[in-house]
Length: 311
Ligand code: SIN
Image 1 (tube, rainbow, N blue to C red):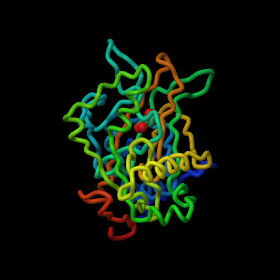
Image 2: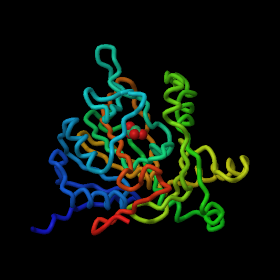
Image 3: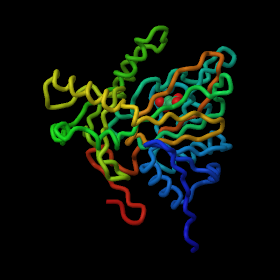
Image 4: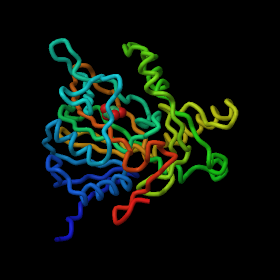
């Protein structure tokens, strides 16, 4: 068999991000390509694949190579006929919103409130808002490998072995409290299906095998096994610490790009700098980290070794 072709990635000048040209994501990935992209995802945190032409089914098929796809229990904003594909959009057709118009508009890590965390998000943007020749609605990222590395040694040893509770309701209520927001309160059934989850404050990334700061302002509510006031003080410190500009990579959308990011080693934020008439339409799959953890979640890592057995 000929050796598998090596996928070339061109890194950005920032601590995150690489561009991968000349890979047609409408063609099903081979095992080698899937493994290579998984390694690149861990290494660069954010991968852009420009100039794609995908159907919703092809987006779903590409995403599903990396793990089980999440289906939101609320059933909101699903692409027609695809429960695993969510629409992020401010567009309206025949009086109906095409998607969620305010998803992710504050710093967070998707699915940290779930026992099975998310490995990656895969977004395909086909309508990108523009003003004066410039794209709006950037998706921003921060590097949690680097944030962990830089933490003061004293804090690292104080938090070593500690766990953090993450709660979906925190982000939801924060969004609801914004002026003009029309999100309804979560129903009891939705709350029951998303009970808070506990993860290590410092998670060993299953691909890079390095530690990341797995504490995000969107969902982290409590450092366990310490007093409420100490927990609050340290959480505030960690939230401020990770916001340092040196960890930032702001992705400026290009029409027809696919953007894939590592949900373990980064946090992200959707910039709401466009108006209702400046249209945005993006389809999104949420890839769960099912290749890397068993049902007990982060407490049971399965480390990734693309050249041999998983351990
Ligand atoms: C998200 O998945 O959090 C939304 C990202 C975006 O719309 O830019």
